[in-house]
Amino acid sequence: MESSDIRIKQHPILDFPERRKVKFYWEGKQLEGYEGEPIASALHAAGVKVLHKSLKRGRPRGFFCAIGNCSSCLVVVDGVPNVRACTEKLRAGMRVEMQVGVGPVPRSKE
Amino acid sequence: MRRTELAIIGAGPAGVCAALEAASHGVRVTLIDREEHIGGQLVKQTHKFFGWHEKSAGTRGIVISRDLADKVKDNPGICFMGSTEVLGYYGDDGVLLLEAPAGIQLLEPERLLVAAGASEKMILFPGNDLPGVYGAGAVQTLMNVRGVRPGKSVLMVGSGNIGLIVSYQLAQAGVKVAALVEALPKIGGYAVHASKIRRLGIPIYTRHTVKEAYGKNSVEGAIIWELDDNWQGIPGTEKGLDVDVMCLATGLTPLCEFLWQAGVEMAYIPELGGFVPLYDEHMETTVKGIYVAGDAACIEEASMAMAEGRLAGLAIARSLGKVPDGEFSRKREDSLRELEELRAGPTSEVIVRGLAAMRKRLEEHLSQEHSSRQAHQPGAKPDAQQGNQQRKRVSS
Image 1 (cartoon, rainbow over the protein chains, first blue to last red):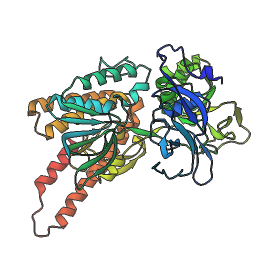
Image 2 (cartoon, rainbow over the protein chains, first blue to last red):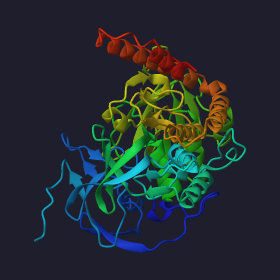
Image 3 (cartoon, rainbow over the protein chains, first blue to last red):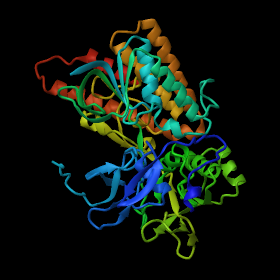
Image 4 (cartoon, rainbow over the protein chains, first blue to last red):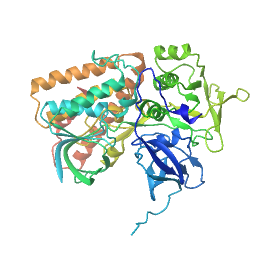
């Protein structure tokens, strides 16, 4: 699917007004999404489906429930692991990485 | 530490209706939700609801949720804590641990209502963990709330109302639904929803299930096959489908973690969605002062969740001494009759059976508890009156 087709513009019941676009990073690559939408929805719209690698077998995982129940979509945000991509809001300049297993221990920058 | 008369976990249809009812009797309510919005999963329901109340029947979920949110915001008796996750309930101290935007907080409620909703059931097949396999609720959230299409072509699994409604919503959003599979010999949901799907030309395969999903990093296709009378796949009946999304509408199960943690008696009642708390007709669990409503009590539709919420809110207000006898029995009868009418149709037969099984388990539990109390007091006279009261409360 072309990225231009993945965002719904016309809908018989719902309106999706334009919102402020922000730049963020996925695995070091700059992408664009709407400010305040969940990270997972911005990534999905950018064609990214694999958010996490499973703990034991390293299998690819994406979101499953999209409302914060299931922990299938854990990512690392600005060095902090175990962030639910489906509920965490997108902010400008956010650095999001795929989480492998339990992810890194967050280190303070002092 | 903050105190409140009633803490409600979950600001969906059940929690909000309980809050409004309780607050109308002067109860100070703290309504908590991990989302910033009020309305729970109603915010993604673009379809019109069937309902008993003239007001809700024929209204879209998104409109009901806006209406509920306005009523909460206008109500000075309700403190809404959005973006706040309940981390646990510490029953010995009667304290909830909250993670709010402002940080970790404690809340000590006099009564607790768990209206946490439900989570989706997973079914077993190779590849079920691949990205692209989504719960039906996730598909709705992505397309109806976020305005993002889940993919190009979808295999819908399950023909209950959710499977049928979400298939229709996918078509409305311009996404192809390649097929709908149903393991049972007939469609589970309402005929009115099923005929909409058929009119769109979406093939419905009954007695079929998923054999596997395949793909390197995400779903690239799926294989379905026919089932025999023993629910086993029949070799040679496989069909390949070119899909990048599989949408699981295979049922929900109550979110009861707080009730387990609080020591509420639980029972496995498949008709109600899995493990459910035991509760009386006023939605009070086996732990005094802890109530349940909505999908956390039994998997049904939003109309029932709202009626249960009102009933729980009324009973809680009553238990806090805020509702006069006459008003209580009148409103209680109204709520019970509303629930009965909502469950009068053939699709609710399973629920009615499940609720009867649950009430039987509750009676057994109460009589066991009663006799073990007597056994521990060898010199004491059997407290017949109390026993009668308990039975009366359950069966009246």
